Image 1 (cartoon, one colour):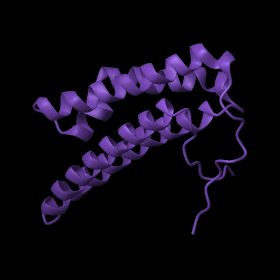
Image 2: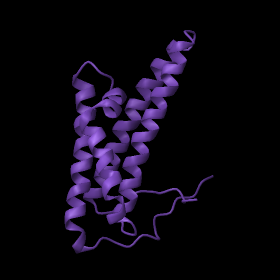
Image 3: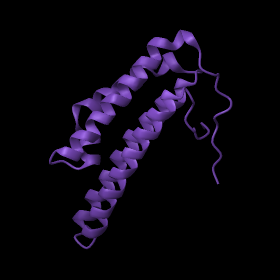
Image 4: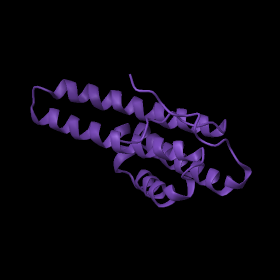
Length: 141
């Protein structure tokens, strides 16, 4: 079983105001992509990975990652980045399953489940940010 590191990150500090706001903006961009998937013709996970708001959000994560290193916001940035890349992985697996034809029902189930997983990750992350608490982080290699 994997243990997660959360207690080794510094507690919230007042001087991170701009970075906290940026993290809220990134969650908002991801949430907008999710809502677009819910109300539009795309799937949740498809909209999350392929829409401009989510792509901008993950680019912001990478651009500002150094600024949050060593702070409690680092866990949120890792959470957001990992959500994006794992969502992309689930899409690749679903496409592969569709290509096998026999895996079509599994692909549809995977897309639906991964969409719910993305919603969970965005909601949980943003809720923890509002509480100014860290996200669980797997140990870095």
